[in-house]
Structure formats: C-alpha cells, structure tokens
Length: 121
Image (cartoon, rainbow, N blue to C red; front, side, top):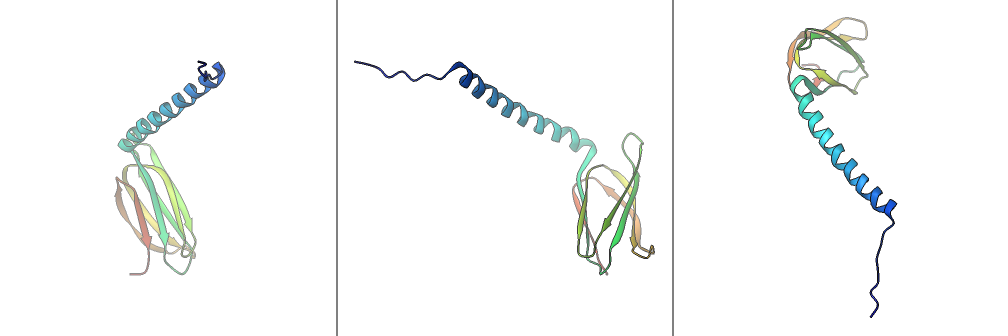
C-alpha cells in the first residue's frame, strides 16, 4: 500500500506562519492603540453644515498636557468635514459665515466621538 505524502515546501510553511504572526500582532497593535488613544483622544469630531452657505468652524483649546490646540474646518453648504484624533478637553468654538460674521460661539467639552450639526434654529 502506498500512502500519498502531502508536503509543503519549507518556504511556503514559513510564509504561512509569518503571515499569521503578522495578522495577530497587527490586531494586538490595533487593540492596544485604541485603548491608549481613548484615554486622551476623541477619535472623531465631525461637523455638518445645513446652512445655505459655507461656514468656517474653529476650535481653540488645550490638551491634557496644556499644549495649545487651534484647528479650523471650512464646510461647504450641505457638507460634512471631520477632525480625526482631537485631544479630549474643553474647547471654545466659533462658527463663522462666509462674510466673516459670527453665526454661533461657545464652549464645549469634547470627551467622545461627536457630530455637530450647524443649522438655523
């Protein structure tokens, strides 16, 4: 009786093992990176513009290490733009119309993902 022998070349087997290792290490990296960033970062801050003209959305604040944060977004009418990885904290925000008039101004504590909708009240 002859037994069929199934064999893989050494390089194919090593590539398979390495690919599995890369996948597992990659998942561990994503998991650890997410928990590390969740402590200090808002993952996403999006702004939707429901007005009939473009607006500029400005935020000014400080991160947990007391570094100044200043960011601007220009959002077309009926558009949406996002900041990624904004540090958690209290920010002063201002919404400017295309003619540079202030539409809205205030403070907000960003501590989780959020979408802000700018519209006439």
